[in-house]
Image (cartoon, rainbow, N blue to C red; front, top):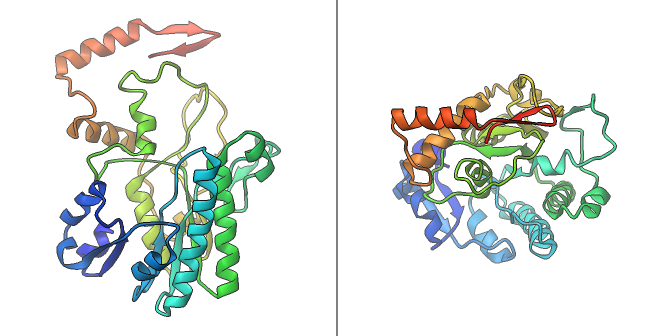
Length: 300
């Protein structure tokens, strides 16, 4: 959005009169070229008004919850409304839909040596059995998007990002960055023996624009920073981001994104800023507090 507004393109954004979106008006070029519209995934007329006259639609909105009633219907119906509105607008040449890694990886029958790529889909029955309604909702919403686009002749491209981190534009903490913050502010009492794939928010934004602007772009695109971790605590999935790299996207290292996430949280007052002496003392204390449990070194 920031790049489009700064480059002279008009941008319609659903987020009208929501205080959490006030920062958008301060983006370069936003005063002249950004129009904030009423936001409601279940209001088809509002979606039509936002889409009217646009050449491209980026459908990024989704509930983030494991409450099935709040997750599944809004995600599915909202996506269908966006595809329908894009088809009826008559000006939209491509829709880019933000799906999720949650629509890709939830499959208990996938072997450990299988490379996770755009051909993989989450097992809906497994999502329901494990009550992972977020992953279920994202998978069903994406499937609905593909079907609606096929029926209405809409050119659809999908981005499937992993956990998104990086500097925040807004003053508040969103759900994905909260995942990082909880390990730094003391609110997490346990550290899961698990692995997590990350991608920088700026790379996710770049991926959306890239697949919109590239005539050859089609299908799904797994959006993940896939550098190899040294000595992981648990064997991670093997993931492929080759499709996006083939379009020319260069991913920031996760270590850089994590560092800049923490710096941003400090600048916005969500984490304290330690001076050099206190930071060194804190690091020494944490190193001394390291325990060995079950052969795994745990540093809290």
